[in-house]
Length: 294
Image (cartoon, rainbow, N blue to C red; front, side):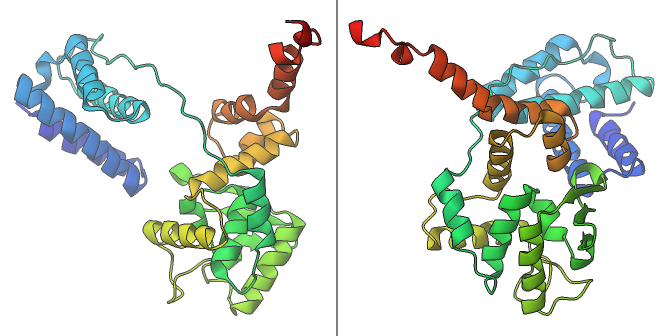
């Protein structure tokens, strides 16, 4: 009789055969291993007695652990896939054995203040790689992993298109590059004598930036120019904010940000829409013309 660990290894092997990115496979492995340890300690190491009730008990355990709502949902999705995988392989698990998803509170998406955006742009220094990197992130909204893997050959200066060959879930996408950014990139490439196979943004040895290095360099540069808010993903949120405030629709935003679903883009539109601000100015009690008489 196979244990939960046996099935976990088979599950991960299937993910490898489906050519998932290594990071995703590692995440699945970690989520399921934690579940298996919890389940074996509380019930047994065999999967036959897994039930909806016990999966929801695990969900409650995760909630009590204090991790974020989004992390809990991701873990439960992985467990549900794992349970379905075992069922498909003949394990006698009831068909209703599926964890219910918890409600997820939507945190405010942190973005730069307009004055900080202006400061980043006005502080542009072509000779400073980190300065160009910040302007690039602000102008494109690409993810950290994408920009770290971007090479000179990914940019087609004639069509003004950049290939994103290292985006999420192995999807090959492309985005348009604005003329001012193209000019900045030309000067950046020329200043550093980069060739087509070189990384656009690189470490001191000319190699690919690591995830920790790009965070450290960006945060250090932002502090140098007097911007208090730091991070990498804040550039992506700020890009979306500016696009929405300038009237970009949901479908276009989805294309620019390479979201898998339009629901992801809708969150930004709902959050940053000028129409929402206009309605507040129209109906807020302090904007009522009779306010002075209250």
